[in-house]
Image (tube, rainbow, N blue to C red):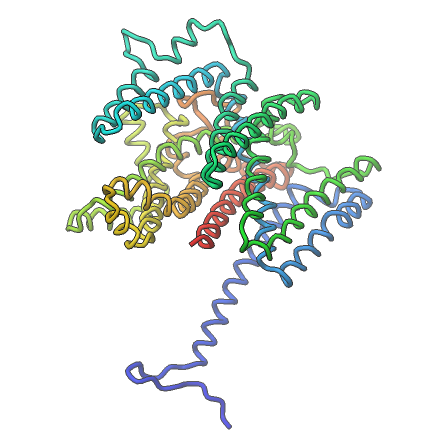
Length: 543
């Protein structure tokens, strides 16, 4: 019997199964080509940055036997026997890495950019503003939205800015007259530690519907942050490092593991927690064996010296620290500008804007702007922020706002999709309970759309961090030999520094320093993309 290669459908003409099969395998082949090409590129660059062949055979055997082989075996076992456990294991393994990068970014900003007392007293002003706003809501629970908004603007402006020429702001008064000058670790403990304790306590209070549980867990987090400062002191490490790493690595990991064990549908996937134990335990054991036995490791270009040193004409002394600080500061400016504006625009277009010709015209232009080349946004930043507003050539503020314009259409579109995905039945149920439109958006729409909004925003920020052309157009320094200390300082970024190293003719720059810079950027971007994927998967599993 001849093989049937086509079938007839009424109203659809002839449908070929052969073409469908061919199309399927063509898509598979294209995906495999892309994955293989990316893998080869990563391996090639990583070999140049790490130079594993320079390590002794004993070192390679120790790492292969204790770290690499056990990790591959456990990955292979879970991929076959328990795919859900594999996903959980990957998430648990990546969470400490992401927390470590976040903690490093916070430490970089506080070590080289912000003064201890400036941050501390500004946080005192923020706390005072929040207390006054809370007191107003308690005293005036029936106040309308306009009164609340005016009170927030007046109190926030008076406390944080003051009246120029007449009254200083609260932070300025403390800076001028307070005899107390907090040290770095105390500033971080009383600001980040207290904030982490409040958020954790609120989370557990809501989860278990018990205020005592929230108070106990919040107190444990704050006590742990304080204890980590003294542990770091005894270990010979800066105390602020212990506080921040406890809050960005230990606390999120503990909350994630607790959440796993508190849900019944994760019972079959809990075995995946073996993966981070094998990976991190194997890495620690391999390093301990190599150090104890005195095995010679690889002469890697990417190391602590490279990450903590300034650019230098000597490839052995060259580092990416100033560009790393510049990228972190750019990321902060990008988040502060693109996230509230993008999400606010998306909420207005989806929830408030009427469906008329003007709205459709705005929507079409936003979609078109998402595909405009990045160099055009560089020209826009040059004309708007430098020539018109005179904000300074190549400064952190100008670079951040220019890159914010670049990703703003992406943030708006992704936020609109997340808001649009919230079922309309939830809105109608909220209205049926007597809630206003703003209450519905705040309590129903935004909580369910935030994971999707964060996913799109993180991916957009990852694109902005890898951009070079807009920064070159606004005359940002391609190589900076000093660390920026304010938003008005000129600052380089990691892609710009890599662009500079690519022009150096020395082989050590071409196949060593350059590769180390590329690996650093890739680690940051892949970590941000992984966070976005985890948020998306968690959002899909909960809905």
